[in-house]
Length: 439
Image (cartoon, rainbow, N blue to C red; front, side):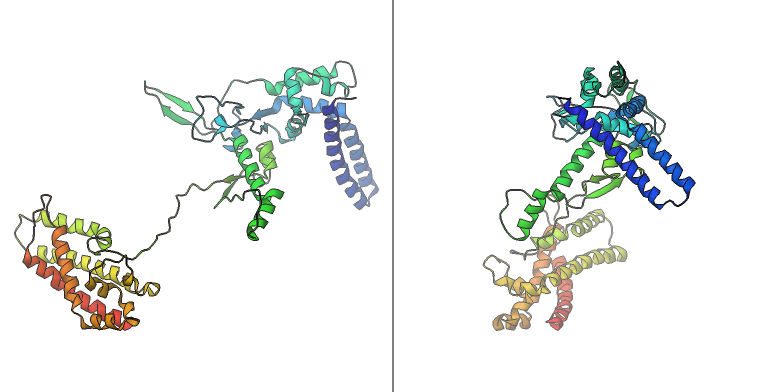
């Protein structure tokens, strides 16, 4: 019985021959010119000769020196770069166990192949053929000719093939290239390392395969169908939100690497954007000036307080009084905007009736006008308008407390409180007229 990998190799070569013959047969059917038909027939004969197993393997072995098996491929950085590709395998140990996913802590990653000439990718594909869990490259590495012995046409040919294929395993002196990216990494003791980042093609392929499995496998399709039908299924549904794509090689993806060709020249990119949190709006439960509004207005309060502290020892001028007034009016306007935002929430009508709502009664009357549409007593109290002075008084007391110094000493007294209250009440009456017009 022959070697199991020998049959795999023969089928691989036959499939490549069949593909080319099929294409030429179609051209022959369309050809009407006898000369052109003769050229196609010559090409067919050449394809048959070239795909004799021994002849084809000999040609593939000649290109072995131009094949580079790697986990990190240079041409992803720049398609014309000529530096070194890196094969980094089985690096997992106690030192590399980190919380970050990388080539260093992933076992059995797929191996990529980079070629100086895309035509040599067939050599890489041949070496990656496998049977019973062993690839031809494994046999090449061990110097074992058994998968190729029955295909040789003359004594010693299998040994020559193995020696030629072993060129892919030779480590060249690492070198960079002017078209690669380089990073100067400083050292504690002085000086620096010059780092040349390489693209982790093997890791990208592993991620690509996970996504393909989770999107298009039969298990994934059945799980999604069960989810739509609200039925049970033993398999998980995994979605990758806002997945991006990066493309390499254009229409010639094979010029970059073998795995890049297999992926169609694209790799998936996970979104690195921060999450967009949805704001959960809730009605206030306690005094709004000491709670929700104080948080919203903290920057305006800070600006006003800083300005007042700066001019505390300066003589009062019309400009300073006017500027202070504009800052206070800005706070009052913010309070009106805050209130309107609550007042216009039609789906919140009557929210002040909740047992959790501990607002003072006059603030309830201010902030929940739509409750009056179904609560006649509430509407009467609101229309009376007495609550406006009480709300304005709350604002004046709150603002004076916000302007206390670090030792909790009041910078302003009853006079300023009366001014804050008066200005707020005036603006509140105007704002409430607009609110009544919208109910």
